[in-house]
Length: 177
Image (cartoon, rainbow, N blue to C red):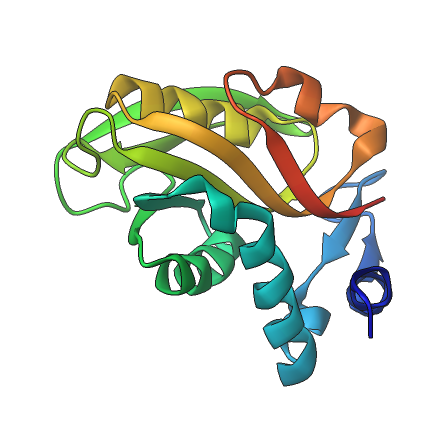
């Protein structure tokens, strides 16, 4: 199977959930992809291939589905794993960034000692929609003086234009809707 066929198989496995988390939103549910061991391995292989050339030292992953992909990538890249979480979920001193979602606003936190200045970082999440969550995560990386080398997403909802909000590093995504 070639790369295009592999990506198409992943795309076909993603379920649309209408009106979640609120009316008018069509949620891209990747749990249907993750439950299949062959598709999960293919996802990991393809995502790793998108960033293997970047000499990544830390994978910064966004709660919660980003943790699944980020953990796999950190292992495969020989990098450390850094969780970015909702406020109050991290047990140590943290820094915070706020952002707007397509259906509200929220904040994210990272431990203040999660990155050393100059460490090469990729930000990983399952989906990029409007880009607010990833942009806030980039703000956290900048606060800790990490070097953001790429944003990486399994799914990009291109019609929402989220990649245009992300500055300072290339945006790499595997599947586009």
